[in-house]
Structure formats: structure tokens, C-alpha cells
Amino acid sequence: MELLASIVQRIETVNGDRDTGINAFTELLLDGAMVQARAAADEYARCARTRDEPGALLGLPVATKEKHALAGHRIEQGLYAHRGRIAENDHPVIERIRAAGGIIHARTTSPEFSCATVTHSPMWGTTRNPWNLECSPGGSSGGAGAALAAGMTTLATASDIAGSTRIPAGFTGTVGYKAPYGRVPGAGPLTADWYRGDGPMARTVADTALLAAVISGRHGTDHGSWGPAPDGRAGLGFPAGTVSVKGVRIALSTTLGNYPVAPEILANTLAVAGSLEAAGAVVVPVDLPWTTEQITETVFAHFGHILGPAMEAETAGTENHLAAYTRKFMADARAAGQRHTLVDSLELDRRMQVDLAAAMEGFDVLLCPTSAVASLAADGDYLEGIQAGGHRLGHYWEAHLTSPFNVANRCPVLGLPSGLADNGVPTGVQVVGHPYDEATVFSVGRAIESLLGRPSWPRLAGQES
Picture 1 (cartoon, rainbow, N blue to C red):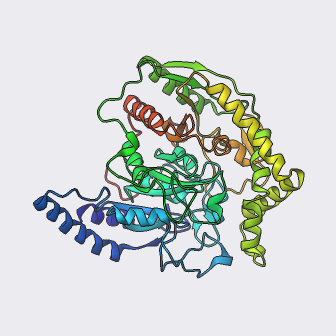
Picture 2: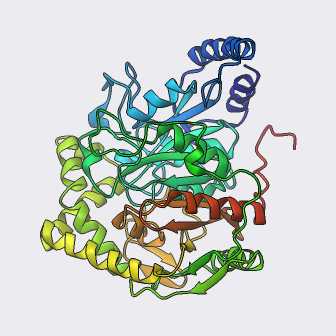
Picture 3: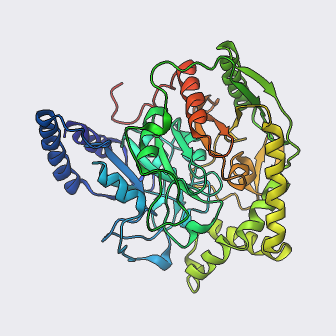
């Protein structure tokens, strides 16, 4: 109860309003959460008497992304067309969090239909980065990253179709995990999109692994899900004690081809690589033949046949109420879908997957930055692209080095902090594993966290120290 009470006080102190504050939430569920916290305290007392094992998340506050449906609550995804829509059933990750004793105390913001790497919408206002309120926490799981960085939750759920978990983790100094496709069960119909996945965010690698273990595994409502039934104490094979990287072979790519990575991000990524090398890892630079234009064309060809048409169907007749970035996303997806058939897009995917497999041959993981730019403006639309490293990128999604690993979506990817940029906003790196090799990704992530330490948390209004 004390933990939840402190988090409630924290929310009241630092979250602020939708126009100038952090604004991380669409809904607070505090009254019900306090009832659950009292019940959790009683359950802990019972387990102490009977020596039963408590639930893996018993009593822990969890903030869930609004798209993860709670039965009886709104499920609007920031869309005018979805106003007042009520969920009939819990999303599978919600079901599993509750079964493990987690307390859902809040629901977090995202951009409309989770289709942007900033987090603002006409429905929910602007979500800001606790490290620098002029900047975005990223997206689409921006509310989750902001809530974690500001100390307004211990754990959070997220989703990822082109970096929507790892981008906000990178910008907020938190940890986010994109599991292999199907590892975390989803809710249809778009769960069948092989770029997509749901996952965990937290403030440490261990906490992220814990939540991943709780929500992962085969589920009866998602026949594409796989793996053993969840066990929050297993930790996905997360190693206990000190993790050694001696002899671990790490492929290093600072640009994934030609991403114009900002100097401070490059420096922080190289510092991570240097720390791993000093600890005994074998770090070898590798080249990838990708270009940002190729990657953008590949992912939008895919979106043009799945996500784009789904968005157009869901928002038909309400186009005038959509954010500018949503209209641009749908137009770009539609145009790419006209340039390429679905079979064409599969070939584009295959080429990138072959390139990645070749670059990672003989290595245990690939290490690369999360984003090429140090920050995004909190209220930015970036309709004309984005300036990065002295280059004008045609689409602001080209500013992030994340979507290649949704194209290669059987690869587990852990995003975690690498340092701070000159503007005070955190930077991040990604640890990319071979298909389905989750344990190695978490082991290397644990080592990086141990070697670098965590960034000091942001000082906020009302915070004494």
C-alpha cells in the first residue's frame, strides 16, 4: 500500500495538465487500485504464514497503454471516431498482469492509432518528456516512457510496430523490450501483422524481464502466440548475479547503413561498446548496405497493405478531426501500397532480413543506437521531414534506427540507456539478438546496465532532490 500511495502522490505532484505538464495518462484508476493494494497486503501476510509463493507482480503498480483494453473501460486510441468506445474484454497482457497480482493504476497516452513517434493528439493533448518538457518522450508508447521516467509507475506496457517501445525508452532513459513476433499474445485483427508486437517497459533491465516473463507465452485467444505458459519468476532465463560478457562477440553498427546519427549519440554508443570491450567482449564494427530511403520504402510498402487500410476504415468520415501526422501517415502508406504489391513488399522485407543475417553471422548480438536525433519537439508534426546530422530526411520516421527490426521481427531487441545528449535528454542503444534468442539479449543488456550505471533521474517540479 505504501508503494502505491507514494506513486499516487507522485502523480499528483508532477504529472501536470494536458497543455504544459508531463500529461502521461488518459485515465487514472486510483480508487480501485487502493482497494487492490490493501488486498495485496493481506495476501502477502497470508503467504508469509503459509509459505505460499506470492504472485510475481503482487502489489506492484502497472501503467498500461490505452490500446491494451480493460473490460468496461474506454478503448479510443486517441481517435475521434472511437469516442466513447468501451472494451468488452481484457487484452491478454492485462489479463496476465492481473493474474500475477499487478495493480493497474493508470492508462498511458499515445498518438492517434499509435502511428507516430511523438505523443500528442487532439483528444489527449501533448505528452512531454520529464527530462526536458520542450521535448517529446517519443512514441507511440510515449505516455509509458514519461510515466516511468517521472516515477509515476514501476512498470508499464507498450507496443511496437516500428519502434514504438524502443524509441520512448531511448528518449526517457528507461528500458523497453520488443519480443520476437508472437511471443507476447495480442488482440486481433492487427495482431496478425507480423511487424507488430506488445511488450514491457520499466526502469531497469531486471524489471523489464520480469514483466516480459509475466505477459509472454501461448494464449488461447491468439493462435499465433507461442512459448510456455507465463511464469513471472522465470525471468526469461535472466541470469542471477554478475553477468560476464567475456568472449561474447558483439557486432557494432553506429549507422545501420547511412543513418545520420548525431555526434553525441555516436559518442555515447561508442562508449557503450568501449565498456563492453573493456569487460572482455569482442566488439567488431560491421557494415550494412541499407539506406534510410530503402528502409522507409520497405516499411511503408508493408503499411500500405495492412495498417494504412485499417486506419482508413476505422476513421472514415472523421478525417477532419484527425491529427496532421495521422493524415500524412495514411497518405504515405496509401502511396507506397500503390507503388508495391504485397508480394513486392515481402521481397523488400526478405532483402533486409538477408542483409541483417549476413551482418550478424558469427556474432552473438548486434549493438546500434536507437535514434539518430537527440530529441523531437513535444508538439512536432514533422510533416516536411526532419533535419538530422546536417541532412534533410524526407520522413521523420527515418530519424530512428528501430524499424529494421520489425522487418526482421523474429529478432528480440532490448532498448536501454546509453547516456545523455547535450540538451539533457537521454540517448539509447539497442541490443539485437538472433531470432528467438531472448536470453542473450537480456544478458548483454544486464551487463551494459551494470557497466554504465543508470542516468540520474530527472528533477521535476515539486521534487526535493
